[in-house]
Each structure stands twice: as structure tokens, then as C-alpha cells.
Length: 237
Image 1 (cartoon, one colour):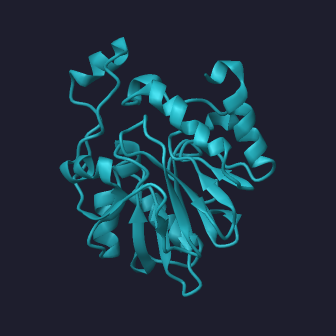
Image 2 (cartoon, helix red, strand yellow; image 1 turned 180 degrees about the vertical axis):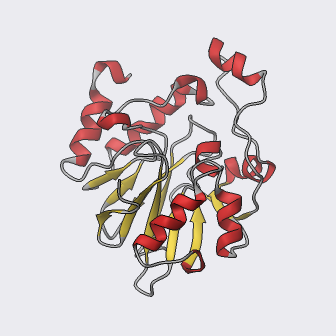
């Protein structure tokens, strides 16, 4: 598998555990890079390899954005902050305290599996400073603008992102595309699986041509229709 897969001009997907976990990279006109999510603790070498594949080095990274505070998204963040020389990461305000503590967002204890997992050490990662707390509707000044869409449920501060210039959506963990099949994230790993299902429906109302997932390959043809079809299916509720 390629270390870097171009999804749109200047937007790349770095598979850090096959297609199962991805980091997204945006390249600015000046050559600087913004990363979205940093995979698990062992992901940084794969991220660096992805950067090298597009002619970049960690020092070119100007910003790291996390979609939420889980170890498969924030696990490699502290190491990438060190390698890039940044002061911290950007994350929604409701997940900022978890990132700075190195603890995953709380699990859904309305479910038996969530209650069991909540009672054992699970999902921790190396704490990392938060340089900016994001809010719903905010436009991040990256590669022509990335809009923040607060889609809580998988975690309190979970966000999805829409890149204006390429009309590309990043779902984060609101929706997975494991083995090219869209599904909800594992319910026990959500803070509120019910809220995740509710808030994800905002993604069906947005306009985009390409959809990228942290978990699974991207879709570059009929992406919005595919997401809306998933959301409208009876078993998606």
C-alpha cells in the first residue's frame, strides 16, 4: 500500500494501519502541511513516511488537528508534536481536557460493554498540549479553509471537517468505512452511541464530492449520495 494516497489536489491520506486507520494531510500553496489525526502510538513513523512520499518532512507541518480524544486518533499526537516542533494540537473544546490528560473520552455506560470497559484501564495515550480549542462552525485557516462541524456522541467534542476548496468531507469517527462498507462506530467506544447516530445526520445535509474516513478508504465518486444512502437506511437508525 502506498504511504500517501492523493484524494484531491493537495489533500492526501496516509494509511497508518492499512486502510483501517488514516491520517489526513493538507498541503498549502506555500508548501506547509496540516495533519488531521495522528493514529495510534506507533503511527508516527508511518506519518513521516507519508510526508516523505509527498516531498515533505515533519518540520513542514504547521498544524495538527484532532477529530477527538481517542487513542487511535491522539495516540501518536505527542510524538508528532515533538517531531514537528509545534506547541500543541487543535481539538474541540469539549475534548481538550481529555487530550491534555492523556485519557480517552468517557464510554457509553448505558451499554453493558461500555460499563465493563469503563472499569478497566482502557484507551489512554500520552498527554499532549492543546494550542487551540475549536468550536462548531469555526473556519480553520488551512488550505483555503476547513469548516468545523461538531458531531458529538462518539466523544463529547467529536468533530467532522469540510474542506471548502476541494469539497471534501472528513467524517472522523461519526461514520466508519471499514472494508469499504459504511457502518456506525463500535457502540461501546462511544460516549453516547445514540447521540452519535443523531448528530451524524448533519453530514447528510452538507455539500461535498469526496468523503474521507479515519477508518476505511475514501470515496471519491458519489460520496454525498453514498453517505445519505447510509444515513437513510432503516438499519442506520
